[in-house]
Image (cartoon, rainbow, N blue to C red; front, side, top):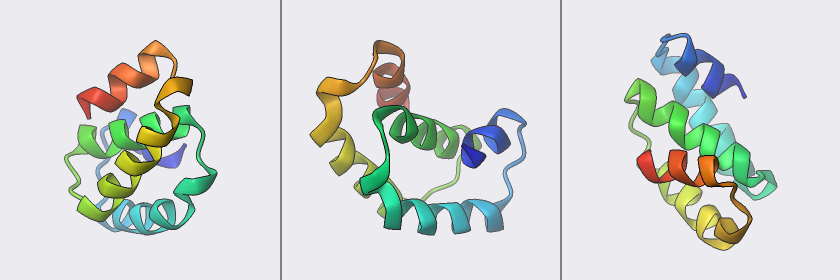
Length: 79
């Protein structure tokens, strides 16, 4: 997950996160629970606001919440 890697490295490139937000919003239906959690965590960690992405992640997470592992659920809730 590119967003996760850049967030983990502490590199909050606004242009990259804008591009990732657009791409992720368009493809969130393909995400597994871990992808949803990692994406939410990454954007929250770098402080990159993307309301449309978070709305989409929230909707997808609601549908899959029963499939989340405990750590992924905690990371999503934190984000």
